Length: 497
Image (cartoon, rainbow, N blue to C red):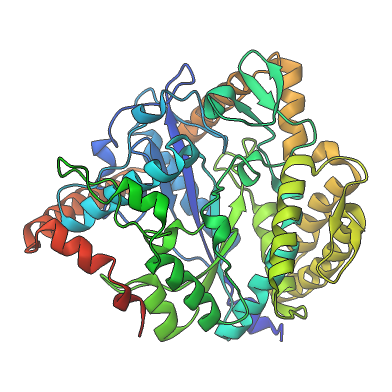
């Protein structure tokens, strides 16, 4: 029921990843800047996979503009600490060095900090470090009164129709060839160091992105919390021969990975959307979900938009709100293994060929549907939600945003993916690094030029100092040796109630 009070209760937060890059377009290999505090404990500024990959995290917001304002302020604080480095504004990485040279995130000497680094070492062993340097936007979203079953229904529909977001917002149709060095990639050469696909929307979400042959063997059903938890627990508990061959430790005692199971921890499972719950200190995410249910959902397929100063704009957020409400309030029958496989094929098709005229997708109810027809039907459902959202908030911001974005269906050249290729061709001799380097410079200059009051500067300085003190407290409080801690950390019984 979309009553006003419920719709005004929508809460959202954003997590935004970005590589630190050098002025020339190469990866910055410097440590996480000390002025930003501790990546282990800072509430808003951490790292993702790599020491060179920042992750900026907003709080929870009722207002779209408030959420974007906080994200902007975090960017401003970061840029003031970066000297001549800049945040790379594309999801696909800047020029990368040899795989083993990409630095994994470091979080200090505590057991929990070491575990985070060993987990990342395991990701590098399993998938290669280059794959982990892809960056994106994660959108966390909740609505009052939604049950765990309601959220899982929305997730099933999102997985059926989320390809639409790749078409509308995908912004990674090209990449620097250093990303696929030594790999079979199936891309076309556009310029000396640039590869692309002419109708691609999001190479990040396609076969070159977060993909894994090992994970393709995980059959995760979203029909209920228990089926979801059971399939994930199996992947977290089942030894995988290729990872057993790597081993947890080297003969010299260095750690290769946290475990030899198909997944080391829950976060290793790649998905376009996740069921989430705020966890307590030391708690496993799966245990939190089983004990207290789904609290919010995390949308994980949004590319960084290089034309938006903080990677995402208000129109995209409002369309996401309407789309998620559409997923929540539409009928959502149980998924099947065949449907799950078709959803994955649709995702890959739209990621690689989304703007191809006449593209046809597999419909989850059977048969095939033209992308354009199916998209129009989904957008009509989103329009109903936009009307309700505008009625709750007053004004026409949601309908206006949806109308502007829906125009991309009629005019594919307006899609961010098409705009990226057009600007590369017009001004940068088809060079991906050339365009993104220039766009990163311009974004940095624009954010540094915004007002940044002394009080805000002092607040971020205080947060950085407190985060360093908190990391030191955690390190002093450790009593277990790391191997004992690791065994406890990955113990299967910690995932059950």
